[in-house]
Length: 439
Ligand code: PLP
Image (tube, rainbow, N blue to C red):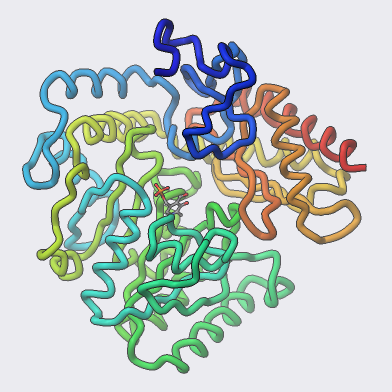
């Protein structure tokens, strides 16, 4: 057992050289976390880090938020499990709030345990409802790691197999500053993407079940098309009865600052037919789900049980977390502090030839890196910056497209101005260090 004698003493600190090879490791030299508080986490060696990745966009409000941990403990003392066979009070209340917040008329919600499973469910519903296995996805998209969701990713870096139960057709629009339409002004960019969509549909007449799309691509490097893109897409899709699934796994719950959901940046279109969520709602507890119009959700009759979906403990966490974030207007905080953070990062990296672009919305900020003096992605620069940030006590996310050299910044939505200033300075220092190491 890890740290059996002292929960704050970790395996890595006791056995410096021994890495737990029985785990699939993500980092070469992993960080063993022991605890967190607010926007900070500590590792087994006693190092403190400012968490600019919010877990992995999962710690939405704050680490060890007393309101959430209390709700978890109280619920665990009553009943831990129910599955979706039975109801439980926090599940009923959370469902009611999510349905009301979704903006989807006559909506139903189905709880899962991850974003992958939520998207799988949405794809299952769409293909069953439309009696077709053809789906539209965006280039550079990411929707999860199951067979069907890796099968539709628009970037083969995230897909170990090209075999898929679905036939996927890819469209442009998720990346504004690269690709064939990058030089066009916003409106013309949208028109070019719509023309591309029409062209794809013309070649596959009649059968497409749904478009699944992230309003801001997450793993793809915190990149998006212009506001209004999905309004224009929706007009084309609706004319053929094709469903629009908005994957809000990263963009939901106010993360983008201006809007509660990512799709709302395209408001003229009205709500999507389905939205999927996960990550931040449980503040780290595993909650995912799909919201869909009743007629679509009702396709699930034959397959409507999730053993761990809607579990009372996770639902209690979600409910307390959602209540906290709405009462404290953390969406507004994400807008204000996120805006400031972007400004500070742009100022601190101006003139640094490693940084192509600092972009984002709310507390979803991407720093795209390039090989100095070129416009080419530079994954080694991202790795060097990530390590330098870690040494300085700052955790950020790495990777993603385009080309795998985007640093991703997504702190808990309660980030303070002081922490934003501190993190911007640390990251700028790390980027300068990475630049020097590359030379
Ligand atoms: N959809 C999006 C947009 C994501 O970013 C992710 C994960 O990063 C997923 C789905 C899959 O979620 P999970 O890792 O919870 O299965």
